[in-house]
Image (tube, rainbow, N blue to C red):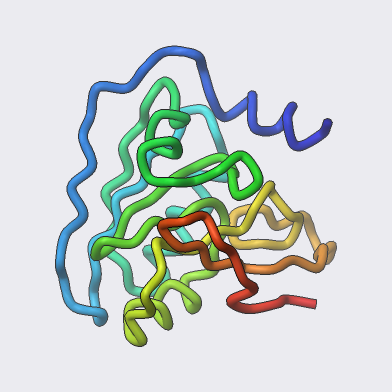
Length: 152
């Protein structure tokens, strides 16, 4: 229930008009395009995390990120508050920059990575010293998921 309340604070019911155009940059300074709500502070902090970790970020404020999730195969079980695209991959939620860099370097045959919901202590969801355990999960075009990295 708390996740639904947090997610609804980051979203509004209107449809976006922007299109997704991932940029095929190198792993050293990839462009990541992030679709997010203008009023979501955790999304803004995640964007800052990416910038501090060597990404070029194109942040696009949209009234509703749900259509981006649906078009890119992000199921409700994988959903979080923002959706991003980098070098043909989807990045859903508060995925650490190090895991995105690893994915870009290894180029696995997956659709993308997700940190479902909004765990406390993930990049952008910092709350003092509190850190919830969480998993970064990979997902493929068929919706199959597996743990990419665990944080405990």
